Length: 390
Ligand SMILES: Cc1ncc(COP(=O)(O)O)c(C=O)c1O
Image 1 (spheres, rainbow, N blue to C red):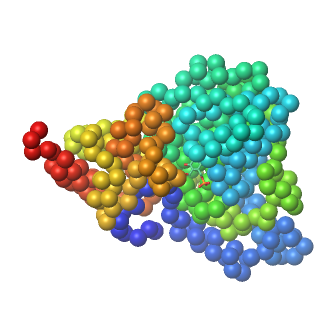
Image 2: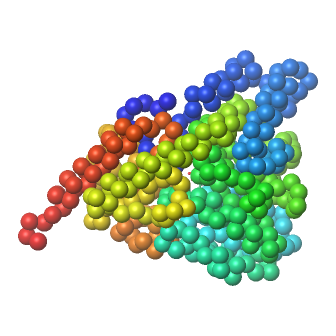
Image 3: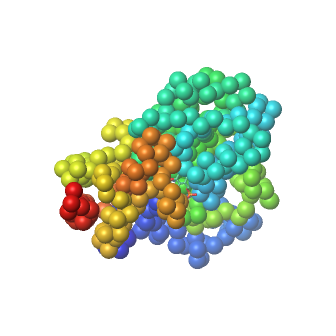
């Protein structure tokens, strides 16, 4: 349970570890410390069986087989492995990757790296709701396209992609489909089989698990996909990702997946109600929503108040609520959000946008307090910015 103040409303950046997850992890840091690769004695065997139990729970959450889940250090590593490992492994098929302009930097920076290594990348544009057009996607695919990488849900504006439709196009054209689902897994139902996904990145700390553990789903059959490893040394994870497994992290990830399975639907409903309360209150104060009204993560609100800098709002409310101006990875720079720019919303609107991410431990009281704090700040800033001569 996070501390009471400031009220945490930045759950796209990270989530607190659920107490039930922490309880499950604790013994694997102390008395059950075995190495799951060292199974000649009970220490290793018990760690190995805990890892496999967790793998099974994660597989259930995403609709895969256990053997198709590869543990990594997080979605950044999974994205690196999916993109670099696949483009290298299947270079006889071509040199072309298709992705989109609103991806997380953990995809975009890898795509740029591949371009520097001589690969070709097409960045499919999005509309003002952050959605790609399926015709643009189809037109981007050429005979030398090896893979498509399109995120399942956007971390800034919450746009949920038509993953199933994208996967269908990819498979019709014999192209491998990867999706970065770091913001989707544990929040919306995912079924890799039904959605035609071949590779999928996800991360424990976005779904009330610990930091430093994530996964890559790697399709085992029809077609069997086998990216080259990017981390070698020991052949762990069926030769796809070497290194001693992070057993406490994996156990926590498994428990977080189990909890998400049973609580996700109820949470979604609760968050939908609260995000409606927030956007209605913002609208009355002159605020507007970025991104889609439908097909959006229930716990995401991205909004702006015309004429008011988001940093000024955030600083003014920071002792009461923790919200952000964009993605956490770019908060050290003053650059406008590449996502909002790609949506055609312009630099000014980008600098005026705030992102709220609701979470498991928030209460209706938190939501009311956040609305009150933000709107008070907006009104104060409006009164300061009014020029007496104008
Ligand atoms: C869409 C998306 N992809 C990838 C990442 C990186 O995940 P991790 O912190 O597990 O490396 C994030 C985290 O902000 C994200 O939101």
